[in-house]
Length: 309
Image (cartoon, rainbow, N blue to C red; front, top):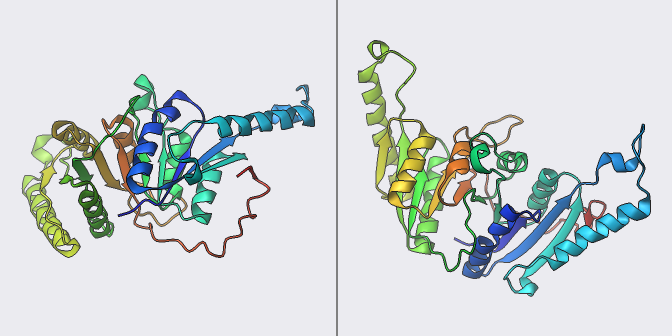
């Protein structure tokens, strides 16, 4: 298990800054290089049109330079020789995705921009797009606290889906557990159908599904070379994962993203609820996560979009 290169998109918000400590801890633990990527947008009204006031090119360039300066002044406790600072103008999700495709990124750490009661309803659009589009693991922490220092991971809760993703996810989780010396608790849900009246619910079928799931988890663990304890639950997976994480005082939740063969990319319906409400970081794994060969990538390819390096 290694995270040699961490991509840390930043927007200078307080929520973004709360993740500094986690990036610093991870970078120290794995001796990682860190890329700070700041993407800003120039309002379309600045270019003029209709009755909108026109901002001249000099003022636009002054704004660009100020954003570059803020990035250069951004403080993070990682040795500067292991830090790269990239600023770009345009869509944050697009730049993050393209950077990940064209560079050997092992981990993305980013905020969710979910706050207070709105956290129940909103996952930041950038985070949602990244979950769909990127293949490398994504570390998010909606409840990140200020001043995290010398944190350790001793308990991992892994949400397991019985699909082609299962064995790779188990092996990925085992690598994490070995690295951190952590115990792992698996969880899989075979939900009851709450919306049906009890007299219409097929309890023998539900029990058969639970028995099949237990046997399948045993089989998948044998193939993966793991022997983690697991629990089968009957409620909504997101709720059950969060309750188990709280009960176990988990330091990390690991979940897959599933695979959908269409324009949506990789996704999983319950992962949004888990990320919004998780009491600890969530590390989401994609089946498509494979070592990248970027030896042929021309570092000037993004020159028109990227300002600074």
